[in-house]
Image (cartoon, rainbow, N blue to C red; front, side, top):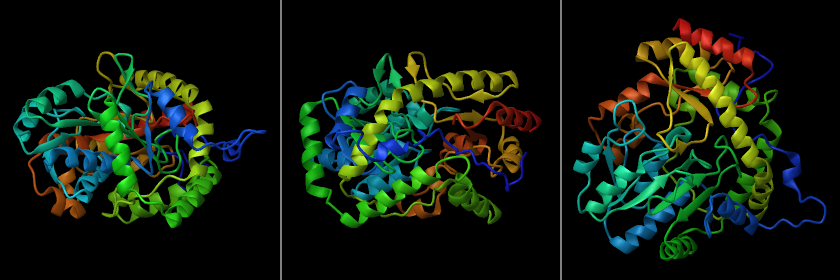
Length: 406
Protein backbone atom coordinates (compact mmCIF):
# COMPACT_ATOMS: atom_id res chain seq x y z
CA UNK A 1 0.00 0.00 0.00
CA UNK A 2 1.10 3.64 -0.42
CA UNK A 3 3.10 5.03 2.48
CA UNK A 4 1.61 7.54 4.97
CA UNK A 5 3.30 10.47 3.20
CA UNK A 6 0.97 10.11 0.21
CA UNK A 7 -0.50 13.12 -1.50
CA UNK A 8 -4.12 12.19 -0.88
CA UNK A 9 -6.26 10.82 1.96
CA UNK A 10 -9.60 9.05 1.46
CA UNK A 11 -12.20 9.75 4.18
CA UNK A 12 -13.53 6.71 6.04
CA UNK A 13 -17.12 7.53 5.03
CA UNK A 14 -18.88 8.97 2.01
CA UNK A 15 -19.68 12.48 3.15
CA UNK A 16 -21.36 14.78 0.64
CA UNK A 17 -18.46 16.77 -0.85
CA UNK A 18 -18.76 20.41 0.26
CA UNK A 19 -19.51 23.21 -2.18
CA UNK A 20 -18.47 26.78 -1.44
CA UNK A 21 -21.65 28.03 -3.12
CA UNK A 22 -23.63 26.51 -0.24
CA UNK A 23 -22.07 29.01 2.17
CA UNK A 24 -23.82 32.06 0.72
CA UNK A 25 -27.27 32.61 -0.82
CA UNK A 26 -27.35 32.47 -4.61
CA UNK A 27 -28.56 35.61 -6.40
CA UNK A 28 -31.40 37.26 -4.56
CA UNK A 29 -32.31 34.18 -2.51
CA UNK A 30 -32.34 34.74 1.23
CA UNK A 31 -30.95 32.33 3.81
CA UNK A 32 -34.11 30.88 5.34
CA UNK A 33 -33.17 28.64 8.29
CA UNK A 34 -36.64 27.10 8.29
CA UNK A 35 -35.94 25.68 4.84
CA UNK A 36 -33.66 22.99 6.31
CA UNK A 37 -36.62 21.55 8.23
CA UNK A 38 -38.77 21.97 5.13
CA UNK A 39 -36.32 20.17 2.86
CA UNK A 40 -35.87 17.39 5.42
CA UNK A 41 -39.63 16.96 5.86
CA UNK A 42 -40.18 16.66 2.12
CA UNK A 43 -37.26 14.28 1.78
CA UNK A 44 -38.67 12.11 4.59
CA UNK A 45 -42.23 12.39 3.25
CA UNK A 46 -43.67 13.74 6.49
CA UNK A 47 -45.53 16.84 7.64
CA UNK A 48 -42.81 18.23 9.88
CA UNK A 49 -39.43 17.46 11.42
CA UNK A 50 -37.54 18.97 14.33
CA UNK A 51 -33.98 20.24 13.90
CA UNK A 52 -31.56 19.79 16.80
CA UNK A 53 -27.83 20.41 17.23
CA UNK A 54 -26.89 16.73 16.89
CA UNK A 55 -28.31 13.25 16.62
CA UNK A 56 -27.39 12.76 20.28
CA UNK A 57 -29.31 15.90 21.26
CA UNK A 58 -32.29 14.59 19.27
CA UNK A 59 -32.24 11.41 21.35
CA UNK A 60 -31.93 13.42 24.59
CA UNK A 61 -34.98 15.50 23.65
CA UNK A 62 -36.99 12.41 22.70
CA UNK A 63 -36.11 10.49 25.87
CA UNK A 64 -36.81 13.48 28.10
CA UNK A 65 -40.22 14.01 26.53
CA UNK A 66 -41.13 10.32 26.71
CA UNK A 67 -39.99 10.07 30.33
CA UNK A 68 -42.26 12.98 31.22
CA UNK A 69 -45.17 11.15 29.59
CA UNK A 70 -44.42 7.74 31.08
CA UNK A 71 -42.29 8.05 34.19
CA UNK A 72 -40.41 4.85 33.36
CA UNK A 73 -36.62 4.91 33.61
CA UNK A 74 -35.03 2.03 31.63
CA UNK A 75 -33.86 2.32 28.02
CA UNK A 76 -32.87 -0.83 26.11
CA UNK A 77 -30.09 -0.29 23.57
CA UNK A 78 -27.94 -2.64 21.45
CA UNK A 79 -24.76 -3.82 23.13
CA UNK A 80 -22.87 -2.75 19.99
CA UNK A 81 -23.71 0.79 18.96
CA UNK A 82 -22.32 4.30 19.20
CA UNK A 83 -21.22 5.10 22.78
CA UNK A 84 -23.09 8.40 22.46
CA UNK A 85 -26.37 6.47 22.75
CA UNK A 86 -25.46 5.31 26.25
CA UNK A 87 -24.21 8.80 27.14
CA UNK A 88 -27.51 10.32 25.99
CA UNK A 89 -29.49 7.94 28.20
CA UNK A 90 -27.29 8.76 31.19
CA UNK A 91 -27.58 12.50 30.47
CA UNK A 92 -31.35 12.16 30.90
CA UNK A 93 -30.91 10.48 34.29
CA UNK A 94 -32.20 7.19 32.89
CA UNK A 95 -30.83 3.65 33.14
CA UNK A 96 -29.15 1.87 30.24
CA UNK A 97 -30.05 -1.79 29.76
CA UNK A 98 -28.02 -3.63 27.12
CA UNK A 99 -29.34 -6.27 24.74
CA UNK A 100 -27.03 -8.53 22.77
CA UNK A 101 -27.17 -8.67 18.98
CA UNK A 102 -28.32 -11.62 16.92
CA UNK A 103 -25.27 -13.49 15.54
CA UNK A 104 -23.54 -11.62 12.70
CA UNK A 105 -26.27 -9.00 12.66
CA UNK A 106 -27.03 -5.43 13.67
CA UNK A 107 -30.44 -6.50 15.02
CA UNK A 108 -31.38 -7.34 18.57
CA UNK A 109 -31.29 -10.97 19.64
CA UNK A 110 -35.06 -11.45 19.95
CA UNK A 111 -34.92 -13.81 22.95
CA UNK A 112 -32.52 -11.54 24.78
CA UNK A 113 -34.70 -8.52 23.99
CA UNK A 114 -37.79 -10.27 25.36
CA UNK A 115 -35.95 -10.97 28.61
CA UNK A 116 -34.69 -7.38 28.79
CA UNK A 117 -38.13 -5.81 28.43
CA UNK A 118 -40.34 -5.42 31.49
CA UNK A 119 -42.70 -2.83 32.92
CA UNK A 120 -39.77 -0.56 33.87
CA UNK A 121 -38.74 -0.08 30.24
CA UNK A 122 -39.41 3.37 28.83
CA UNK A 123 -38.04 2.80 25.32
CA UNK A 124 -36.29 0.31 23.06
CA UNK A 125 -33.76 1.75 20.59
CA UNK A 126 -33.13 -0.46 17.53
CA UNK A 127 -30.36 0.92 15.32
CA UNK A 128 -30.04 1.25 11.54
CA UNK A 129 -26.30 0.79 11.92
CA UNK A 130 -23.89 1.59 9.08
CA UNK A 131 -26.78 2.74 6.89
CA UNK A 132 -28.34 -0.73 6.90
CA UNK A 133 -32.05 -1.21 7.55
CA UNK A 134 -32.73 -2.79 10.94
CA UNK A 135 -35.54 -5.10 12.06
CA UNK A 136 -37.96 -2.67 13.70
CA UNK A 137 -40.98 -4.99 13.71
CA UNK A 138 -39.52 -7.43 16.25
CA UNK A 139 -38.60 -4.55 18.56
CA UNK A 140 -42.10 -3.11 18.18
CA UNK A 141 -43.80 -6.41 18.97
CA UNK A 142 -41.79 -6.97 22.13
CA UNK A 143 -41.92 -3.33 23.26
CA UNK A 144 -45.69 -3.16 22.83
CA UNK A 145 -46.14 -6.17 25.10
CA UNK A 146 -44.77 -4.11 28.01
CA UNK A 147 -46.10 -0.71 26.95
CA UNK A 148 -42.71 0.70 25.95
CA UNK A 149 -41.92 3.17 23.17
CA UNK A 150 -39.64 2.42 20.20
CA UNK A 151 -37.12 5.03 19.04
CA UNK A 152 -35.34 4.27 15.76
CA UNK A 153 -31.68 5.26 15.81
CA UNK A 154 -31.19 6.17 12.15
CA UNK A 155 -28.19 8.42 12.78
CA UNK A 156 -26.20 6.70 10.02
CA UNK A 157 -29.17 6.09 7.71
CA UNK A 158 -30.54 9.43 6.51
CA UNK A 159 -32.21 8.39 3.27
CA UNK A 160 -32.67 4.68 4.00
CA UNK A 161 -36.04 3.15 3.20
CA UNK A 162 -37.99 0.04 4.19
CA UNK A 163 -40.88 -1.15 2.06
CA UNK A 164 -40.66 2.04 0.02
CA UNK A 165 -41.05 4.26 3.11
CA UNK A 166 -38.29 6.26 4.86
CA UNK A 167 -36.94 4.62 8.00
CA UNK A 168 -37.55 6.39 11.29
CA UNK A 169 -41.36 6.22 11.21
CA UNK A 170 -42.14 2.58 11.91
CA UNK A 171 -41.48 3.15 15.59
CA UNK A 172 -42.86 5.95 17.75
CA UNK A 173 -39.93 8.24 16.98
CA UNK A 174 -36.72 8.33 15.00
CA UNK A 175 -33.67 10.50 14.65
CA UNK A 176 -30.98 11.15 12.05
CA UNK A 177 -27.54 12.72 12.30
CA UNK A 178 -26.17 15.55 10.17
CA UNK A 179 -22.67 15.14 11.59
CA UNK A 180 -19.55 15.14 9.45
CA UNK A 181 -19.22 11.88 7.52
CA UNK A 182 -22.90 10.94 7.75
CA UNK A 183 -23.61 12.38 4.27
CA UNK A 184 -25.47 15.68 4.26
CA UNK A 185 -23.99 17.74 7.09
CA UNK A 186 -24.23 20.95 9.07
CA UNK A 187 -20.99 19.83 10.75
CA UNK A 188 -23.12 18.72 13.72
CA UNK A 189 -26.90 18.53 13.52
CA UNK A 190 -29.84 16.25 14.05
CA UNK A 191 -33.32 15.59 12.70
CA UNK A 192 -36.00 14.29 15.09
CA UNK A 193 -39.24 12.78 13.73
CA UNK A 194 -42.42 11.20 15.06
CA UNK A 195 -45.53 9.77 13.43
CA UNK A 196 -47.97 11.08 16.05
CA UNK A 197 -48.63 14.86 15.94
CA UNK A 198 -49.17 14.88 19.72
CA UNK A 199 -45.74 13.33 20.20
CA UNK A 200 -44.21 15.87 17.82
CA UNK A 201 -45.75 18.63 19.94
CA UNK A 202 -44.29 17.06 23.08
CA UNK A 203 -40.83 16.92 21.47
CA UNK A 204 -41.04 20.56 20.35
CA UNK A 205 -42.19 21.69 23.78
CA UNK A 206 -39.42 19.73 25.50
CA UNK A 207 -36.79 21.17 23.18
CA UNK A 208 -37.89 24.73 23.94
CA UNK A 209 -37.55 23.94 27.64
CA UNK A 210 -34.20 22.13 27.78
CA UNK A 211 -32.23 23.30 24.71
CA UNK A 212 -30.74 26.79 25.21
CA UNK A 213 -29.25 29.22 22.76
CA UNK A 214 -25.50 29.07 23.37
CA UNK A 215 -23.67 31.60 21.24
CA UNK A 216 -20.22 30.20 22.04
CA UNK A 217 -21.11 26.73 20.83
CA UNK A 218 -22.59 28.08 17.61
CA UNK A 219 -19.46 30.14 16.89
CA UNK A 220 -17.31 27.04 17.49
CA UNK A 221 -19.43 24.84 15.23
CA UNK A 222 -19.58 27.51 12.51
CA UNK A 223 -15.79 27.79 12.45
CA UNK A 224 -15.51 24.01 12.32
CA UNK A 225 -18.01 23.98 9.45
CA UNK A 226 -15.85 26.45 7.53
CA UNK A 227 -12.86 24.21 8.22
CA UNK A 228 -14.79 21.25 6.87
CA UNK A 229 -15.44 23.13 3.62
CA UNK A 230 -11.73 23.88 3.36
CA UNK A 231 -10.20 20.54 4.34
CA UNK A 232 -12.74 17.89 3.29
CA UNK A 233 -10.99 16.93 0.07
CA UNK A 234 -8.39 14.22 -0.64
CA UNK A 235 -5.54 16.71 -1.03
CA UNK A 236 -5.96 18.25 2.45
CA UNK A 237 -7.74 15.64 4.57
CA UNK A 238 -4.45 14.06 5.58
CA UNK A 239 -3.64 17.14 7.67
CA UNK A 240 -6.78 17.09 9.83
CA UNK A 241 -7.79 13.40 9.72
CA UNK A 242 -4.91 11.25 8.48
CA UNK A 243 -2.14 12.61 10.70
CA UNK A 244 -4.12 12.31 13.99
CA UNK A 245 -5.29 8.84 12.93
CA UNK A 246 -1.76 7.58 12.35
CA UNK A 247 -0.56 9.17 15.58
CA UNK A 248 -3.28 7.31 17.52
CA UNK A 249 -2.38 4.04 15.79
CA UNK A 250 1.30 4.51 16.66
CA UNK A 251 0.20 5.02 20.28
CA UNK A 252 -1.86 1.81 20.13
CA UNK A 253 -5.03 3.78 20.86
CA UNK A 254 -7.73 2.45 18.50
CA UNK A 255 -10.48 4.24 20.42
CA UNK A 256 -8.92 7.60 19.61
CA UNK A 257 -8.17 6.45 16.06
CA UNK A 258 -11.87 6.05 15.23
CA UNK A 259 -13.04 8.92 17.44
CA UNK A 260 -14.83 6.82 20.05
CA UNK A 261 -13.26 8.81 22.90
CA UNK A 262 -16.37 10.91 23.55
CA UNK A 263 -16.81 13.37 26.39
CA UNK A 264 -19.47 12.33 28.89
CA UNK A 265 -20.94 15.84 28.57
CA UNK A 266 -23.65 16.07 25.88
CA UNK A 267 -23.76 19.61 24.40
CA UNK A 268 -27.28 20.99 24.03
CA UNK A 269 -27.82 24.18 22.06
CA UNK A 270 -29.90 25.40 19.15
CA UNK A 271 -28.60 24.95 15.61
CA UNK A 272 -27.82 28.37 14.19
CA UNK A 273 -29.60 29.95 11.24
CA UNK A 274 -26.52 30.16 9.02
CA UNK A 275 -25.62 26.47 9.35
CA UNK A 276 -29.24 25.51 8.75
CA UNK A 277 -29.31 27.61 5.59
CA UNK A 278 -26.08 26.02 4.31
CA UNK A 279 -27.53 22.57 4.95
CA UNK A 280 -30.71 23.52 3.13
CA UNK A 281 -28.77 24.60 0.04
CA UNK A 282 -26.80 21.35 0.06
CA UNK A 283 -30.07 19.40 -0.22
CA UNK A 284 -30.11 20.13 -3.96
CA UNK A 285 -27.17 17.71 -4.38
CA UNK A 286 -28.16 15.14 -1.76
CA UNK A 287 -30.55 12.72 -3.58
CA UNK A 288 -28.25 12.35 -6.59
CA UNK A 289 -25.29 11.71 -4.27
CA UNK A 290 -27.23 8.98 -2.45
CA UNK A 291 -28.03 7.30 -5.76
CA UNK A 292 -24.40 7.48 -6.89
CA UNK A 293 -23.23 5.93 -3.61
CA UNK A 294 -25.76 3.10 -3.96
CA UNK A 295 -24.58 2.37 -7.49
CA UNK A 296 -20.94 2.34 -6.41
CA UNK A 297 -21.71 0.10 -3.43
CA UNK A 298 -23.52 -2.46 -5.59
CA UNK A 299 -20.50 -2.81 -7.85
CA UNK A 300 -18.00 -3.05 -5.03
CA UNK A 301 -20.05 -5.53 -3.03
CA UNK A 302 -19.80 -7.84 -6.02
CA UNK A 303 -16.03 -7.44 -6.11
CA UNK A 304 -15.76 -8.29 -2.43
CA UNK A 305 -18.11 -11.26 -2.80
CA UNK A 306 -15.90 -12.52 -5.65
CA UNK A 307 -13.01 -12.92 -3.19
CA UNK A 308 -15.25 -14.58 -0.58
CA UNK A 309 -15.99 -11.64 1.72
CA UNK A 310 -19.39 -10.81 3.19
CA UNK A 311 -20.69 -7.24 3.22
CA UNK A 312 -23.52 -6.53 5.62
CA UNK A 313 -26.71 -6.25 3.55
CA UNK A 314 -30.29 -5.03 3.98
CA UNK A 315 -33.27 -7.32 4.58
CA UNK A 316 -35.81 -7.93 1.83
CA UNK A 317 -37.56 -4.65 1.08
CA UNK A 318 -34.80 -2.57 2.64
CA UNK A 319 -32.85 0.08 0.78
CA UNK A 320 -30.17 1.44 3.05
CA UNK A 321 -27.65 4.19 2.54
CA UNK A 322 -24.00 3.42 1.82
CA UNK A 323 -21.61 5.70 3.72
CA UNK A 324 -19.21 2.74 3.78
CA UNK A 325 -19.16 -1.02 3.28
CA UNK A 326 -19.21 -2.97 6.53
CA UNK A 327 -17.16 -6.10 5.85
CA UNK A 328 -17.35 -9.17 8.08
CA UNK A 329 -14.31 -11.43 8.28
CA UNK A 330 -14.14 -14.94 9.71
CA UNK A 331 -12.00 -14.12 12.72
CA UNK A 332 -10.41 -11.29 14.66
CA UNK A 333 -6.99 -12.52 13.53
CA UNK A 334 -7.94 -12.20 9.85
CA UNK A 335 -9.46 -8.77 10.41
CA UNK A 336 -6.42 -7.49 12.30
CA UNK A 337 -4.03 -8.89 9.68
CA UNK A 338 -5.79 -6.80 7.04
CA UNK A 339 -5.90 -3.70 9.23
CA UNK A 340 -2.17 -3.82 9.88
CA UNK A 341 -1.70 -2.94 6.22
CA UNK A 342 -4.84 -0.94 5.44
CA UNK A 343 -5.70 1.11 8.53
CA UNK A 344 -3.76 4.31 8.35
CA UNK A 345 -2.74 3.78 4.71
CA UNK A 346 -4.96 6.63 3.54
CA UNK A 347 -7.31 4.43 1.51
CA UNK A 348 -10.47 4.85 3.59
CA UNK A 349 -10.32 1.57 5.54
CA UNK A 350 -11.22 1.84 9.21
CA UNK A 351 -13.37 0.32 11.94
CA UNK A 352 -16.85 1.34 13.02
CA UNK A 353 -16.96 1.25 16.83
CA UNK A 354 -14.00 -0.36 18.55
CA UNK A 355 -15.80 -2.19 21.36
CA UNK A 356 -19.12 -3.49 22.52
CA UNK A 357 -20.44 -0.92 25.00
CA UNK A 358 -19.39 -2.78 28.21
CA UNK A 359 -15.76 -2.73 27.06
CA UNK A 360 -15.28 1.06 26.99
CA UNK A 361 -13.61 2.05 30.25
CA UNK A 362 -15.40 5.40 30.39
CA UNK A 363 -18.81 3.69 30.08
CA UNK A 364 -18.32 1.17 32.89
CA UNK A 365 -20.22 3.26 35.41
CA UNK A 366 -23.10 3.77 32.95
CA UNK A 367 -23.59 0.32 31.40
CA UNK A 368 -21.95 -2.06 33.90
CA UNK A 369 -20.61 -5.51 33.02
CA UNK A 370 -22.55 -7.77 30.67
CA UNK A 371 -22.11 -11.04 28.82
CA UNK A 372 -22.80 -10.00 25.22
CA UNK A 373 -20.81 -12.46 23.08
CA UNK A 374 -22.43 -11.64 19.75
CA UNK A 375 -21.83 -7.91 20.13
CA UNK A 376 -18.21 -8.56 21.08
CA UNK A 377 -17.75 -10.88 18.11
CA UNK A 378 -19.24 -8.26 15.78
CA UNK A 379 -16.80 -5.65 17.09
CA UNK A 380 -13.87 -8.04 16.73
CA UNK A 381 -14.44 -9.27 13.18
CA UNK A 382 -15.63 -6.26 11.18
CA UNK A 383 -13.93 -3.45 9.32
CA UNK A 384 -15.22 -0.67 7.08
CA UNK A 385 -14.28 0.42 3.58
CA UNK A 386 -15.18 3.94 2.54
CA UNK A 387 -17.80 4.30 -0.16
CA UNK A 388 -16.56 7.77 -1.03
CA UNK A 389 -16.42 8.49 -4.78
CA UNK A 390 -12.84 9.65 -4.13
CA UNK A 391 -11.80 6.02 -3.57
CA UNK A 392 -10.94 5.08 -7.15
CA UNK A 393 -10.96 1.62 -8.68
CA UNK A 394 -7.19 1.21 -8.52
CA UNK A 395 -7.05 1.80 -4.77
CA UNK A 396 -10.11 -0.37 -4.21
CA UNK A 397 -8.36 -3.18 -6.11
CA UNK A 398 -5.37 -2.78 -3.76
CA UNK A 399 -7.69 -3.09 -0.78
CA UNK A 400 -9.24 -6.25 -2.21
CA UNK A 401 -5.80 -7.75 -2.76
CA UNK A 402 -4.83 -7.16 0.87
CA UNK A 403 -8.12 -8.57 2.14
CA UNK A 404 -7.75 -11.64 -0.04
CA UNK A 405 -4.25 -12.19 1.27
CA UNK A 406 -5.40 -11.83 4.88
